[in-house]
Length: 254
Image (cartoon, rainbow, N blue to C red; front, side, top):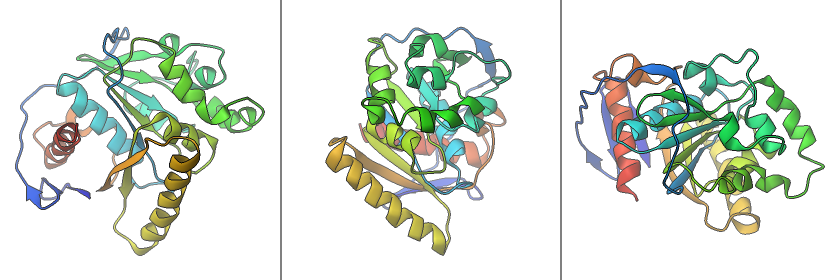
């Protein structure tokens, strides 16, 4: 189990605790998407059907941490609310194309990808149009594989793909689970969260049995939620240090 604690600034996994400080300046820039020459090394879906548990916070901070570590990283905003898109400084008004068009096959991923941070972090953005994808995907062939096949068809890809999923277990989340080889579950420390976790684990098991045999749970992150990557505000803060430790632990599992 992963454990991220902001107030003390430490990170725990499997009984190990270690301080880690990275004095790297990190700032948002709207730039052209970086061409990614390496094939996808790891695809991680950040999933929990409950809202407000820190999915987007975990996704954007993990993606930012991987980019800081020198890995070409793509974050896929698969939530119609588009919080990851907004959090990474991309304006959603008039945005075209987006992940919605990629899922429906009208545009390839590279056309929708936006470079948002210097150092190798790219974004497949989302907006409210993605709400309609849940209905429109129902009538399509291989609807559960739309995201996976779109990413695989690109040829060149990121070393890491981080997928921020919506707060539901509908077709969008199923697409995230089928496209991923690992699942990271943000969780609040409360009784009802454990009930939801049992349901999610059952869903992951079903996806593994029927759609994606290689899918595994990477870990559980107990975390509060913020907006933009905390590294953008103060890379030496307790929160930034905790998420950088989470990044190190993810890389250590390779």
